[in-house]
Structures are given as structure tokens and as C-alpha cells.
Image (cartoon, rainbow, N blue to C red; front, side):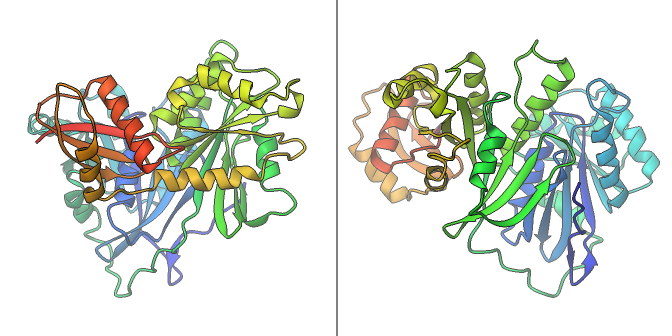
Length: 440
């Protein structure tokens, strides 16, 4: 384990805000929303374990360190290992403010009440944040969460970034306002790359090949668990942060606890990544689990590369035929590039750097509303729904809003047609595209 110094400004430690809650209440979404709330972010980086993620935020001149913890279920050794609770307690000991996140779409659970008891014993400021409150009807349900025993309660929607300003104003009220301007963000941003796949497909060997003898390493940090390693590398002037994850096993092939953890950890790394490299084993061919694992990255909207490893052991030289097999098995990833490599001998590995850069650029691409309107005018959209105009709402993944004349979602075939036409006109190779319809 490599210790990290406490983040600080002018040598003084920043106040710490810790997000806690049971699994699947939206902690990571809230963490990302707060980090993206203001441009003056000092930095965000994986913490010393895979279960705590750190970031630094400047909210209206008040700087603080934000920590996202793993999902907690007190007194449940089977579902949550003691290490996750131990690491969460380390964060809580440092906390100046604690955000206790609750899922507003469900009733208060026994785990919520147990967590509330544990937090009250800490005698630290706790703010209950009721997440997923995105309609007035749901907002009326928030007051019932006062029964947890904390006076400060804020309804928010992390996904839609509703209610965050009121929350942050409250959380940071006692923090010192800095008179110095925040350090400007670096003009270049590291590309975060998660390497995922089944066990024994060569993920660690691929990582070693990517950061091999000619590497320019900025940092190398081993996680506190045996199956997470991240390496920061500069290649052709671009910084890449590679994260090698644990192999995701098929259910029944390992103990239930290990299976759950491998999926949870891999999905956390996928969410934090800009580009995901899915490693396939050419010597074994495609298996059903490969599609499941690749589906995790697709569902998270990550830019994606399919990396066929052990090509020297495949027994065939017909890349075109093998690529067609991959396409047939992974039809939902028709946008992903395919790389053939041998991590063991290094062949084809260097090409991955360029493919990752291209996929990241595609996922980050913006199309102006003017260009999209011209695109819509020339579009031969022979459907029962008319598109008035389009706009791009966000990047990574590129999300487009289609304003239509009918109050319903696009049919799957219409959505598919639009995505294909957007790719044909603007590119977007290597990244999924999201289309949402709204009535004008």
C-alpha cells in the first residue's frame, strides 16, 4: 500500500466532506455531479483503495476534499467485507461534514437506520440527502426521512443536478473562503482507461506491455487489494491512466461474495473511465461472458475498444474472419474498433494508444446546434413522427435531444436510424450515442 499525502492548499489540509450510504443509492452519481458543478476543480483521482474515491472541489471560493465511499451495510460481513467498512471509517474520522445519502424512491430500510445509528455516534455534522427526487410528487415524500434523527435534510436529483446548490451552500457554510484564485485546470487532461475482461485473458500482461520499457511513468500506485493496479503513462505527449481490474467471473465458477465484488469493482472502474478496453482471448474464441462484460461498458456509455489478445496463439491468421465473429456476437458494439494484439510479445500493443485517443476524441466531440439543424433539414426521416430540430446536450457519451411533434419516445428503429445517420455525417467512431426525444 502506498500512502498518499492529504490534499492541501498552502500546506494546510482541506476540510473533508464524506458521502456515505448503502449500495445503489447514487453516491457515485452525486460525487460526479458535485465535481462537475464548477469548473474550478483542483483535481480528481482514485483514492488509496478502490472503495474510496477522492476529489477536490472549489465551490464559490470554499475549497474542500470530497470522498465517495463504498456502499455500506453495517454488521453484514457476508455482503460487505470488513475492509470496505474499515476504509469508510478512515474517511469518516477525517470528515468535517458527512452526507448521508438515501434513495428517495424507496422506503427507509433497516440498513439506513443502522447507518444512522452509527453516524450519530460519531458526533459530527450529518446532512441527510434524499436522492432521486426529480418531480414535485416525489419531493413531498422527502420529509418522512426526518425520522432518521438528523435535522438537516435536502432533496436532490444527482442525475439531473437538481438541488445541489442549496446542498453545497449548506455543507460549505462553515468553510473558510479562499482569497486566492483556484489553480487553473491543466490544459491537457489525462485519459482514464479501464482494462476489463474475464480472468486469464491477459489484462495484467497487456498493462505491463502498455507501460513497458519505453514508458514515461508519472506515477505508479498499487491498490490496497490484490486485484487493482493503476499506472499513469505519457505516450506521444498524452497522459494515460490505465486501471487493470479483477477478472469478472461467471456465476457458479467462484464464491458468491467474490463474484459480487468483481462485478461491483469493475463497474466502478468503468464509471470512472473515459475509455474502456475489453480484452478477449483469441486462443479460446468468443464466449457468452465476453458479451456480458462488454455490456457493462456499453450500458455506462463509455467509449470502447475490443482488444483481441493472444493473437499469436489463435491458430489462424484470418483477422477479418475473426473480427466478423466478434461483430456477430457483439452486435450492440458495432461502433467499437477492434485491435489484434499479443501482449506477451508486444505485437500490436502500441497501436492501442492511438485507438484510445481517437475513441476519447469521438466521445468528447460536440456538434453545434446550427450543424445539427442543417443535418435535420437534409434528413430523410420517413416516420410517423417529425423531428423539428436537434441539439447536443452533453458529451462522454454524446447525447442528443430530438425535439419532435409527438409526446412519446422514438421507436427503436427510428432511434437506430438517427444514430447511424449521425455517425455517417459526424463520425463518433468508438463511442455509443444517446438519443432522447422531447415534444417541442
